Amino acid sequence: MEWINQVHCGTHPESAGVPSDIKTTLADDNFSARAQTSANQLRVPLLGEDGYAEPPVGLSAPTIIRRPSAVLPPLSFAQQQVWLHEQLAPDIPLYNEIMVLERTGPLIREALERCFCEITRRHEALCMTWPTVEGSPVQAIAPG
Image 1 (cartoon, one colour):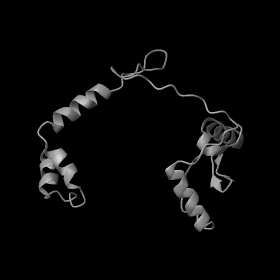
Image 2 (spheres, rainbow, N blue to C red; image 1 turned 180 degrees about the vertical axis):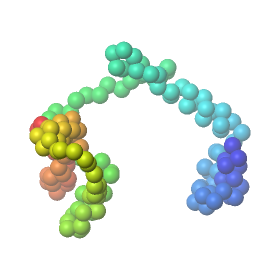
Image 3 (cartoon, rainbow, N blue to C red; image 1 turned 90 degrees about the vertical axis):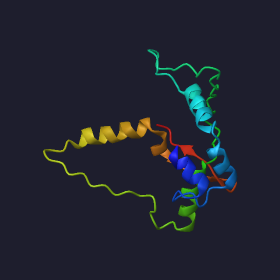
């Protein structure tokens, strides 16, 4: 609660860019109680034996409709940023991460290859490309 008062008074180190209406909301005496009540209402129960959880009390679970495979969805905001960087500087691998693993003992190449193939098969993000269709990038997932 102390940090809320610091933000409201402008003494918190990160309060410089906080708009005044947010500061007023944070300083409201009932804010913490309302926030806690909201958090309790939205708390998701543990998964049941069937692997699914019931929606929180008072809320209904949205129905997620499977996207037809022929429809290529647009990129998320984060994907758009990566795509834009690639368009502006195609030869600079901004998002590549280098990792070195040290191992001991013999390497079973076939087992390692099967592991990588299985991980790739399970995770669509690893099979995704972003082709441009009618001037806009879209998500295309390679069949696995």
